[in-house]
Amino acid sequence: GENVEQHPSTLSVQEGDSAVIKCTYSDSASNYFPWYKQELGKRPQLIIDIRSNVGEKKDQRIAVTLNKTAKHFSLHITETQPEDSAVYFCAADGNKLVFGAGTILRVKS
Amino acid sequence: DAGVIQSPRHEVTEMGQEVTLRCKPISGHNSLFWYRQTMMRGLELLIYFNNNVPIDDSGMPEDRFSAKMPNASFSTLKIQPSEPRDSAVYFCASSLRVDYGYTFGSGTRLTVV
Image 1: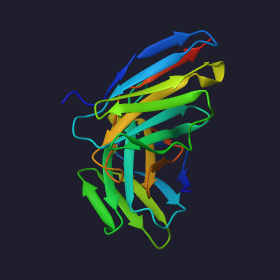
Image 2: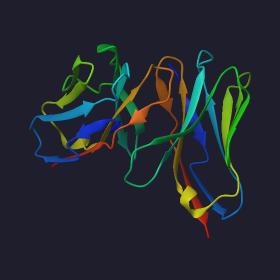
Image 3: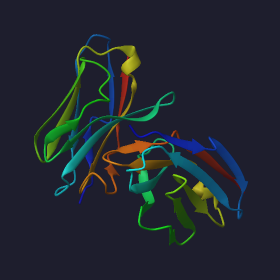
């Protein structure tokens, strides 16, 4: 079955800097790659997703890139703000979503 | 739309008792998923349904866990008997189809003492 690895497990950046979180997946049949943000004590919420026929997608300060050949995808957050502090999960979907272990992002003001 | 609705929000029970968690998916969503979240194991998929039919229950830890979806607007996850190691946050999520964005409910925080 699908296996998703996510790095780093924790990431601390200064407000205004960029943050990058990377994930790799194992199942070449996976074709949908969402990213979720989870604030403390709350539900995971979808922030951006990408499908296998697209290499990059942007939404304001966040972007996701996908390299199907290498089976990895990344989340990029620019101009980070304190409210970006949360746990971020990547996931890959061949026939069901498998989540990475999560990255704790801390944005220091 | 009220989103995915789960109940109860918190449940504290004694070891050996039966626990039933409930979920109402978003109207029109054909896929429903039960996840368990712990610090040690992260987000684990327990079971998912497509058009009310269980498709994959390979994540259900053992026979003490069972899930049903009697109709398109309701699902239950039951643990009988419960054990302390079942303590976790249980999330229900729904989506239009399997390879589409999931909407999560607020979760049920289960504590078994």
